[in-house]
Length: 238
Ligand SMILES: C[S@@+](CC[C@H](N)C(=O)[O-])C[C@H]1O[C@@H](n2cnc3c(N)ncnc32)[C@H](O)[C@@H]1O
Image: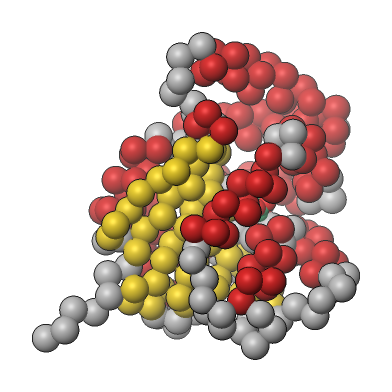
């Protein structure tokens, strides 16, 4: 679990600057991407939603608005410092949100099987060692017919754009990240983790292999991010 320990240290070190720097480095597009991911959840009022790798609670804010106060949105993250920022953000909202934050690991979800209508994970899956194991955990806690929506950074495929972006991502992003946080490791890690993560098609195949049906992905902003969606098959009538 060496990778887990490093990831944990990285997010502890940048927890307080994470939101501000995200907005600067993505030119604000991260918020639009989260918005699109939430649309693809197709949430019904009172749907039970779990947001994994919830970090500072950006997804939870929008999810709470969507499902309404009757239902509790659950956020899970293994980093107490990121969860502390989330708690501060959610408690400060003018609307009363119904949420619960859980400190835990995606690889060992502390929830009963088949307990959620929807699971979201934004910029999280790439950090978890063992995508297949994570997807299997998620599949387990989803109800039959439940939906997984995964927003993740990706490598663009479009000629020319991919070269321009590569220069930004390889050379400028780690420097800007360092200037913004004083942490060199965090933004080199971001670059390297995106480069070595599954391609969009490979991730779709991983969804299929985990048992999800109707899987598809939506590339975002020239393919620098993507939303993958999969549905746990509903129980077939006998
Ligand atoms: C890049 S942040 C994303 C935060 C948030 N979802 C967002 O949209 O901004 C990744 C988060 O995943 C968490 N994380 C990484 N690996 C994890 C694991 N195995 N289990 C639980 N949380 C994990 C980190 O602590 C961090 O808060």
